[in-house]
Image (cartoon, rainbow over all chains, first blue to last red):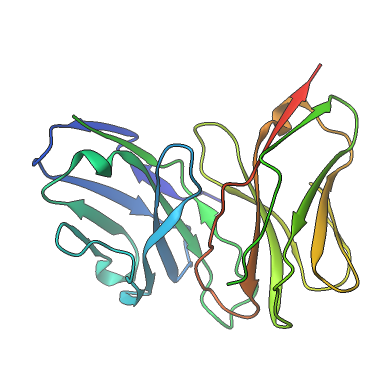
Length: 116
Length: 111
């Protein structure tokens, strides 16, 4: 079974530039999550999708961050414009939908973003 | 989600059992205990979860106290590849809700 795929693995941009990250979840996983992990901290949820609908985006800085999951499969996370404090690893995870079994989340390798 | 408390770091000799403690004194009756680990430069990896009974799988064992206020993750024969940050998380049962990570325990396995 293929895992969660993310790209790119690394990205370096200057502040005020824009950047986009892509995630392909495990086949059949209806729930998709984006987490932000700042160095030395645990991951923090930014947004959760159920199919192509948003379940939780309470921690997403909506003035600069946006995410979409068209067709309920792949997802993109965008930052525009980037700030220095956005330097972090952005992790994508997926799990089965409620009622489909247990809810372990499977994580991708992450995208390491450096804003200079 | 209830708050968990873990020691910031632990050491373990290779081949020995690693016992990682977690306190979750405010856990609710409908909350599970989950354990994940994160090896350097990788995403977190699911290890095990439980409600009130002890659980075992191919990776580890989970011991939950009778009052459910604390638990211990046991890696029976630690190897160098088990060096990672281990996160204890409590989460409402029966949902695909978010995981609320703390800072975890950094386990260093040494020769």
